[in-house]
Length: 480
Image (cartoon, rainbow, N blue to C red):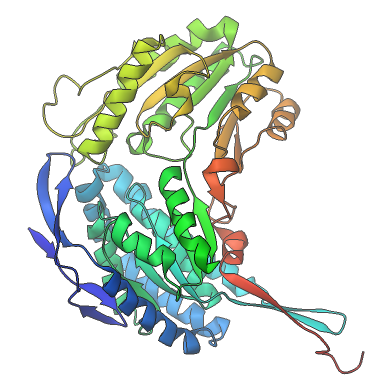
């Protein structure tokens, strides 16, 4: 069993000030797979001091110098990608296929994309005789979740490095194994000392210390809306910038102009998307909106799709769906499924408990509720599991109204035969992203939400903006 008892600060593996041990649980078998030493506020102080010292030189490097470091990180990452995938399977239950093809692969994709963005990014421009300069904001505190460990850190690490910032990172204490490997990668790539510092710990101690620290200039947080509020409150007294990607309850509108085959494809695709990563995706299309007259048709297709999803050991071959990450997460999902039943939603697939053949591990049955109304708890709260809610609408205007009737605004989905109509509906949705007819996001398009789904954007040049301050140098040109 691994003991993670070193933090990475100022280019060295150091013994932390904190002494409390936390068991890391493999969600597939409920066994302890590692132990983690949790950090303290003193550990954060040490990491911030290292990042501040490094900022003086790193912030003055050229784009070419930073590109060389990022390319070295990419080469080391590719060399260790298999180790990253294996760690993610062990710590959060991602099946082999997902860990290799998506969970680990997304790190390469995001870093490669930001390397390309940096090659063409303009940090200076002239406006008359004024030079407008975009400079690194300073020391950044990065707090990331467990559900997509490499995606979430590279959405923050890559633009921070690219823009000349230094950083202090707290990965999730639920998924520390992949984080430890990533720091080994950065060390092997010879990222300058103090540029990237990692402190393990929990939210109330290390997370809160990072958010409130006067030596940190910017916070980038991904997690629940509840935790995001706490981070923003802790950051407010020092007036630091806070960029957040939070929860979601995304609507998936399926239009009535689709024929039987197209409608079935859209419904089944929506249910399959809900099951990816065991439903633990902030942008999951969890509310499916269908014409009232086609509720029975949609329910039958979604139920049949859910019943065909194979739930099993993440180390097994094939396109299985693994467990959810923890006992806490499993129990939350079970409670919400029970609530859906009590509030009168029609259970057409799945339901409470583990799949019959699995008596150990945090496995959830792919679940479908039909005839859900938007005032039900399961339609309002983020379940973060493979649970689909199907709601009826009378016309497209009502579909838009239901879709927007949520405190969240991360993503939305529309499927329809008339592309002009699909685009028109997209323009009315209050979400940071809209997926038309199954379109997938890419590494250069902005990722983020409206309302309580957060603020700021990640990925591509929009992601760089979060890590930059703007300075106007007046009278820069002498001839005007």
